[in-house]
Image (cartoon, rainbow, N blue to C red; front, top):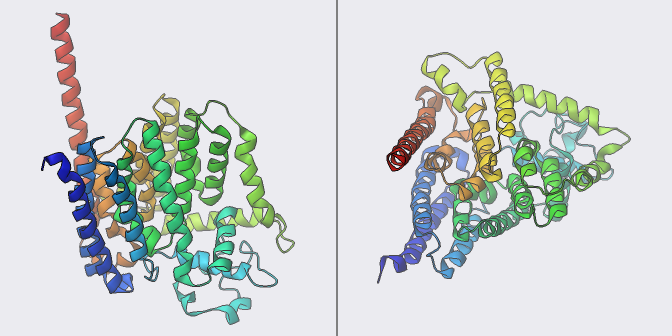
Length: 442
């Protein structure tokens, strides 16, 4: 049997090993209470995942069609394996569950005006109420996120059922990413970079995070651009109404549009806002603005564990609030610089996402997901490794012991080291090419 024929069996073996790690995580139950076993199994799955990525990238277009069906089937299996787990690694699930619950009462409560700690909700509080963060704040998510929370709670009131929609959209993301890869002349099997990522599996299967829906709309907006412009604008408008970070990728998305159809972009913004315009006779925009501002202040004041905070931690200092604000301002300036240069759209989107991850003062693992689709189009060893070890940053795992042992170094030092190695390698390669051109011209 030739080496080429061994690639698909090797992928099958790696899928079995990743699934074994997922089953082990399932047996842990509440993942937030088993930090060390969780990290051991998550990092084991990450190692098998990186080997699978290497096989797919090395094979190019020489993989059999059966490999594609293996990738999709295994991706679904991984997510369904974690479906029964309580979403203990993310507080977002319980926030959306609560906001869907109060909107489903008769009469419904406006999530932008009624904070969870409001005394009117005392009879409605269940055992999961204690998992809510920032109970003093009303909703700060965009309107589509609130609508999805309402629909999700009505259709699937039990917590494990609420994760079915994110899992379904995650599979659609994989298919849209595969279609985009094929259009660009790349093997669709590269979608494994998103499909088998332990981070993507945990966020959709275990946490039931709405980012799975956001990623589907975002990837679809790029995939449809240039061919189905109206649908592309519609998908981007919906993505912005689900997660405001989509606005940061607008320069890259607009770069590949043949025609600007602003009405199709604004239509989902208007339609998603209509249910909340005068919900309970309250105009939601001022309240949403206040909630969003308060949430941003709390986010900035929280524990700094982003890449920008690594140097102050090494020097024994903290990341002060002015430094955090300056980091966000630096990202805004960098975004303007990137937008002014004529880069290829996918590469531009990757650069924007990577810059945000480096400059954010706080980094949750879920933030790294929006980089994965661009890595499928333009792989980078540094960021692939980082996406595999960023599980170290899950909030329930950031304990006193975590801070005292500087586990943050295990996240970011490999990233910065590999980024530096890649930069030096590219400079050496460019220098060799220039020398070759000079010798030929001479």
